[in-house]
Length: 562
Ligand code: ATP
Ligand code: MG
Image 1 (cartoon, rainbow, N blue to C red):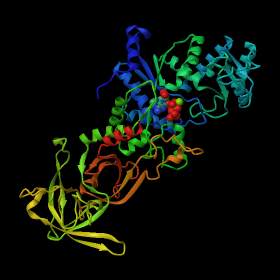
Image 2 (image 1 turned 60 degrees about the vertical axis):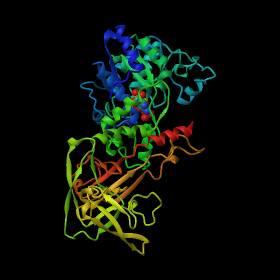
Image 3 (image 1 turned 135 degrees about the horizontal axis):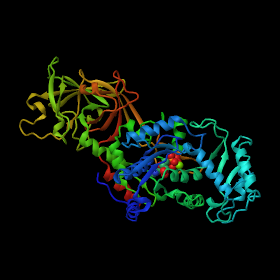
């Protein structure tokens, strides 16, 4: 897909022209390892690594790991896997905020020496009260004017484990009356007697996100710190810290985060879905995580194209899920092999077809790409068709099979329904009987007679059996955050987000389908062999997306909303 320019690239172009940063461009993707990456992160990854790629510049992968209680090596590993899978390479530029804990401590000491930071003994509640509100200025802490010596001594003793958690914090000395609440003497360090997944028990004081983030960018020589809009109000604090310490000052640029309809993009909430068992894990194929999308059958290319297509903006909006779905549809239409599979089987017996005969028909692997060739599919007396493709008392314009009507079996013959056998106990059709016309071999009309319906089918004797999982949106509502009073986003979960069909019949070529393989089931949609639950004995297919593109549906919905 062709790269579009955007306001971020315009800023970079301008900086390059002015020879800012000696003509360097250096970005980074800074995830916190407290969960798996989601499609929102993919937008940020594509943006940061994409810029590095296009400007022949560098992009670091940096773990922002300053909250030991929530961070895990499992998350670190999954994030690395996902970034690589998306097609990006950080080379030797893998860093951690925790790599700089010593350096950050020195910076904090420097601020104390400059009388720009102090140790405060107020507890968290008191600090909150002293902070004031948006309409009322804050009050200065009684500890604000401690001497440099006393502050240095207390900060060293915080580090030396002499105090309990919550007893003391280090704060920046800025302005308790600032209209920007974040500038009212923000906390720089707090005591946490928790082991860190990387530094173990070396530290019991940890720097806050705000203190860490801007300084890590500075230490790494990042030129453009690209982040989401909510960090705009943090920018004055970052400017203050970097200016007081007189260190390299990256340019922060904010863009709107991705919101996707019918799903949720917040690691905290996704974690809740995992922990409460609403999904089978972070890689559940209904999750908007990169690992969930991968398992569902999305390709890295389809996600990159999606991110390119939606672009970057300075205002928040919700992108329709269909936009993401269309990205994979477009790709698989070109690349996926067509096969026949019957998901809700109904047996058809062709009375005038010899019992022991098998014919092989040529089927086209992809009408979009002749180079993908053809394959043989076996035909015999007993086949399966979709239950939906037969109707005993058809409405007008029902062009599929019904008593006395003729349809085409794709690649095979015309058949006509002559009898219905019912299972009286279950009040259900057990099987139907048809006759075929030998003159229609290959599905061609011998005398120009018009047949409107063409059905997919699978030979009963030759079929592979498999399970098919039909996924629908994870949430019922376009915006799952919109909830009734007293309820939370969980109440908007779609109870029908998954339908499992345990006995489906697949054409025999699918017996060798590799895990992760993607196919178009003719007339049904795009499906992917599940990488976790599928086995040779029982293949499992996830529906990636249905076939039809639903543009008209979204447009209608968009009009309705207006
Ligand atoms: P979450 O709200 O899901 O916990 P986060 O911002 O706390 O996300 P981080 O690990 O800090 O998660 O995110 C790493 C980077 O990804 C940040 O630079 C952040 O701006 C970006 N990012 C996170 N969510 C989105 C999103 N929905 N759209 C675009 N970028 C995002
Ligand atoms: Mg964050």
